[in-house]
Image (cartoon, rainbow over all chains, first blue to last red; front, side, top):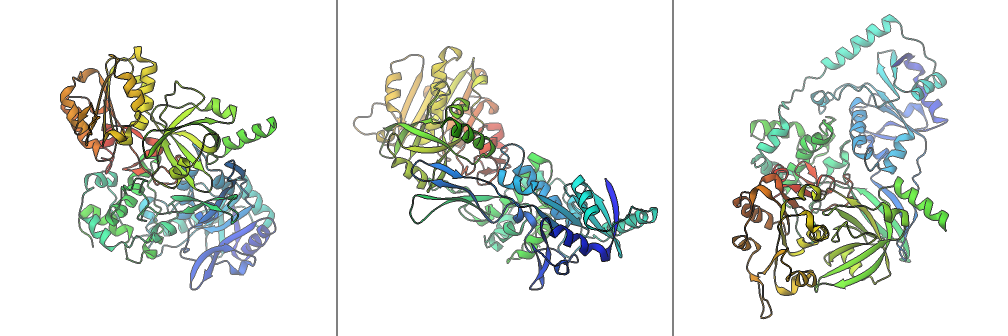
Length: 340
Length: 287
């Protein structure tokens, strides 16, 4: 890796410079909370944000997108071009970068998804260090550290940033758009101190011992009925989750009925019809079965394929759930057999 | 024209969601609700590249309506055409039923893991179907038929609700007179014309002999059926990892992404739809 130091007061130059060649997406304030949004003025960017309402996944996998245009008469695809503008996602926290790496496992590889891939290829990621908020539990999954998947990562050292460049492109944009200097021994010592303090700041512990085994062994545990009673099946947890990737596909006809678009939208395993088949059978028709499936898939299904859990501990689902279901409490309940 | 086709093939390679146009070359009414469609993929390169195993499925795509996963009913030994046995039970299948010979629909696939045909060679095979579950098993049955000399004893047990719902009757009538297939049909509600057995398919296990050390089982039917048929096979001492089941789930994308077909810790579309019983036992909520 290649390192540079940037004075904090110079950082707006980087955002302005990037803006000349890329669409810059960064955290901005909205009604007292934060969202990723296109920015023009660097002064809008709030790198002191806690977490954003929606995760960055929507810039690669939008809540709704057109997969193809079609003609009905001969069942022919008219157009399935994937257009992606050059873009920078600026100010991602380590959890959200790690979440994209987990999404990559699903959307790249076998049967690679060209829509996701094209946007991913066209987007630079610039990460920034964070401070833990009261719903964060990324330390539990070691996703408070990120080692790859970004172009540049900025570690806040008070009056300056310690910039780690992971890619050629990352190094190039730093040199082109912002005044920077090489790293001194003092900078490296300060970096070490800062990242140690950061790690120390997490005090949440969650017992994740043998979760996949527990999910199987306690499959019929009454805790799921209790969480099922609470759950409203609203799907908010999936929508705000940086790693939830389930989708549905619909065809939408033009008024003349001759052509139309095939559209993909976010979906949630918490919705009642999610696992229903044509003949009327619904394999997860109770709320309890659906809540359980969400955890079962995240902590065991995904892990069985990619050796990681499908959660980065960002805490968005805990904030979004109108019924107050928190993943930390679910995991604890699974361990202890009691819902607190 | 030739040029267009090359471009289309390349697009198809690049985009797994892109359906291949296929022409309906034959439609046969099987019952009131089920028809057998024969399809031919129009693009020659794609058609030749389309190789499948019994037990795999395709995504049938009708633009303006949507997509539905349908298991392939013809045998891999029949090339150039594929057959889909489809019940009119939803939007896409309803739209397909309204199509005529010569109409064009879309196909993606083949997807998933099929039956272990090569492993089954040299062994006895016991196939058990219930209702529309005969659709994927018919591919395996026909494939075994086409390479009959490679197999030991072949037994087919097939249960339907009533005689009018028995699928592929023309084929079974043809085989009734052969001594190299033990074919037993049963219905729950017989009528005056019925000359087969009466009762659930599990009842037929009293009539068959199984060599437990040398038999592969294959089961497909309504979800409620699996547990009871597996029980009968286990009573015959068949090994858990030689009993194969095919699951129906909501395979919306077919390529392990959309999440709808999750069963236990697996996805039916890429990890199944065929699982052996040992695997199925390890899928919580599967049976």
